[in-house]
Length: 319
Ligand code: SF4
Image (tube, rainbow, N blue to C red; front, side, top):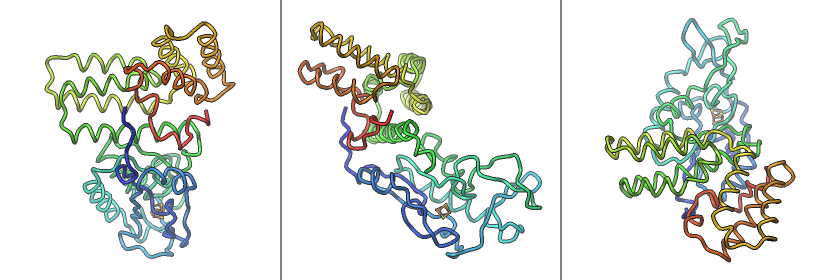
């Protein structure tokens, strides 16, 4: 499956402070090493700072989420300087102008940009049990529930990082498919290409989506809408070692007829070693790719699972 998107072909939204811009309340930044120096080699970031965009200065007094009766607002700790509506309106504007985004990386804990678990305070200044969502990020996520989103802190986790990048590339491929005009045949081909990826995340979802594409009562647009929602939801589930190992065994079964006994045993041992945590996913995958070069199998070669994103990101070395 083609993974050959140029850097400028994949646009990912990012909180401006993570991208090195000194726009935080104290005029500092919060540069993300992974975003700026690794992922940034392969995607184009579009940076937004909602607080600066609505006219707040740099530096500026801190603002926070305050729960006042049933309303959550963004304001200074004493309740003054309410910018809730301005940031919401800016979020809506960015969301409407950003249909070309293939992902978004938000700055954690921010009352504007935080994706989840943002601290919420009472009007008296006491932290509440309730956790909030940044007012800007909420608008972006509401406007496009399919958009892969993550926070900078969570991206330090190797599994979450890999999962996010895989979703960004899957979504970008989907956007390319949409742009080319969707047909039933293209949907079936896309699903076939995502077979092993889906298996590694959730076998039930693979089967459910297959049944969806077999329905004769759905118009293709409705089918496509349900399909991509199901796919992006399934890909959010973390792929476990057990599921990856089972997927690798399926792939091995596809071309094992070409392997001799020693080669089959070596591959089986590597898959088992991966399953029990003795080696990273990249090791059995590299051996599979090596055998595929010697014994090409077009059905396997077209699988997104083998090259979900640029190998240079080394995301499969970490788990
Ligand atoms: S977290 Fe968002 S609002 Fe705050 S400085 Fe960063 S980009 Fe601006």
